[in-house]
Length: 266
Image 1 (cartoon, one colour):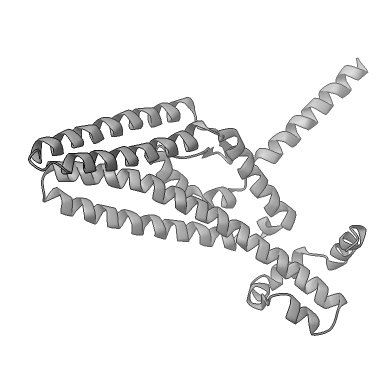
Image 2 (tube, rainbow, N blue to C red):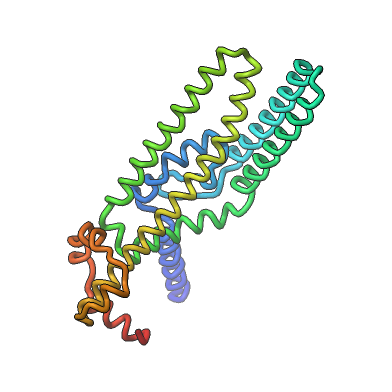
């Protein structure tokens, strides 16, 4: 009886720890939220983020993506048929249009399969690992980076969608076929643009963390090696250090870092 109670407590503790590791901070999750919402509409979102959790795309989301794939391919081949009837007298128009459409659809299908139906479990783990990195560096204590990334993403989305809307308004004055052609082209283009933007966010995320780690190491080395060699060897990130000076002084114990380096033989 006692053994069963102990096992139950251990299982509950493990479950609580597992859940706590998967729960994401609101600011961290919201920093990627604008891009994720747009990709959710486009059917290209890699994960489903809600209630401070990230999960693989749901069955309905993947069905939505499959419906979009069928719809886009059908409209694209309809456009090729229209242009073939309209420019039948020009022998090179149809082969060129067909080749371009085939390449565009092939890239679109490859992107949709990759983001929606491949590696979605790894994408969920990647989000969790990114937040664990923030917790390890104690960057979750200061949300200025995530807030600025959120604002930058909102501005980027508004700017890109404004350009697309202007282009669609201009195309609508040229007839239905022109509007359909540009609409499908912009949709496929948007799936690549926002996926590239998402990758850029992740690169910026890691670049800022690398700079932050460099600031910590630089400040530590300047404490133990008081000469000008450090300034010539290590890049100068004084502006970055000034930005996080209060943060570092509050949350970092450089004596602990010194012990950590000594234990690893640094």
